[in-house]
Length: 470
Ligand code: 6PG
Image (cartoon, rainbow, N blue to C red; front, top):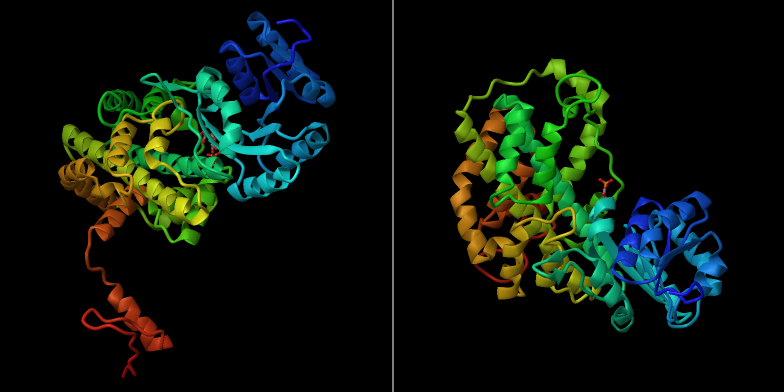
């Protein structure tokens, strides 16, 4: 490449994610140009990319934009929120009709819709593309979830397909739909991520507190699980976490990490939108609530001596391990079931025309929620694109039926031992509700009519009824 040749791909924001992503692009054979206001980040990228001979970087926006092949392909990897608007504003005077701007951050889908509509008036194509896999994924192959103009995607496709993770030689990226479809799918991915993480934490809590398992035994158990139907990135890294020694003393690092979990908001957004769309995602909601409860440490510590934990029964180690495995598998299926259900409804409401099988396909590698289970989820939606809920898919129905006795026993142990199982226990209640043809909500309707004359329907005749309750 001569130094004056325009670059194929531009990237704004050379933090760790941005630098890794652009190095990945260059390594796949595309010339790439980076931009950041920070000269140190620019220098770091040029140094790291020197051996590819395809990476340049600048602190000057005009040089950056004029150094790109047309139509320009510019990806933003900057923090979500105001920084995205600020970058777009500074970029806009330099852009031309037909240019493509991709926001690769965790932006709220409504922001993406607003930006897409505003840039469309200038003839600029705007994409919201969720990128999952963290810094390592960006470097070695992330899962990419793009949404925007279908025609403009043709320009992004070769680059994205080359850099994405691969599963059975299929790239983990696909055009997902118009406008904010990509950000929406990434948001739900993160909601599922929260639920899987919390379910793992709950299993850890029961094994540790009720089963008295130590970290090395937990590391071995999770490692074994990762060879079976629980095979997943999160189970794999959890096994490694249990084995990590504490750099400041003896024992494992995990025991010294403060139990207050932070969040950047994508899990909360998923729950907020699910409430608006009327789709129950209690496992996702509970995982957000548990992060909030974790933050209330001072309050928890005040309450602890008032309510000592009960002694639960002690199970033989193999039995407890088998129950924990079933409970975690069950909670995993429920988290994906709820997330997919939400995506189906969002697709209808927002007109995304999502292909749920394809979404499961691109989650099979690269992203944080990648799991062996996603191959079966892909199959379930390929067999029936209109599947209302994963619990109705024959393969999953069979597995769930088979797992249920152990799941119930595990949840009972948690309840008896006073160990919170918001996601696993909540998932069991969700499942029991979803498999109940009749729920006690006839009583709720009666109460509503009693105090507010809100009326009710009957099971045996048409119409709307009101009673003057005594
Ligand atoms: C991913 C992750 C990534 C990020 C989360 C963390 O898919 O690579 O989801 O986007 O690690 O947003 O979210 P919290 O800080 O809210 O836990």
